[in-house]
Length: 249
Ligand SMILES: [Zn+2]
Image (cartoon, rainbow, N blue to C red):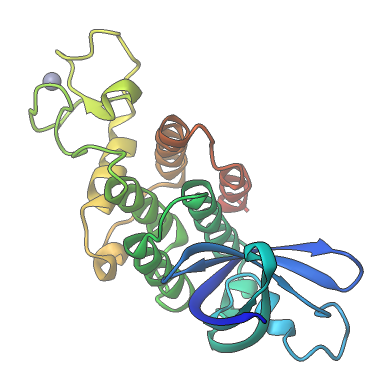
């Protein structure tokens, strides 16, 4: 006997197993990260082919077998975010967000706040016309803050002073520090890159289109945020390099 489970989830990653099957990493609202097998989807006429596409968002029906292994038996798609495929930069930005989720969700309890942020940012990437670099910086800052891995980035992490004209990213302090508190003499972040992080990370998502950041500042901001990710999780987001390359194309 197997149990039937329904979850609302986004497919973060598909990998091949065997000749016709795939293994999905589903980010679900109800159960966090769920690994599930989907059978026969590499055949041309497969009925559930769409369910193994990256970023397929829907209600997945799973059967739970022995030892907690899941198999996908159905999927009612909510949104496939197909438009992301039309633009390499947006698609790669979505892949960076998916990798972030995979890094932080491993073996952790359901994170409904991250799920909401992720689906909100996927929707913005696909439909809003806001630049992907703004959405991506917003996503990483918010996700780090929600996860308790990042202090208030508008203030010095040591003395609490508002940061205006100087900010150095101090990983051990979990945020930025002012000139006086930078006792380790860390090279300060270029001011425009710091302000990109500060402003984008403190905005509402529908206002993100009002900021126009230079590509070079966005690149520096993303590299700085990736160092915080690495510091918090022990892993950095590898696809960020690919994203940065795509920004210049
Ligand atoms: Zn300070």
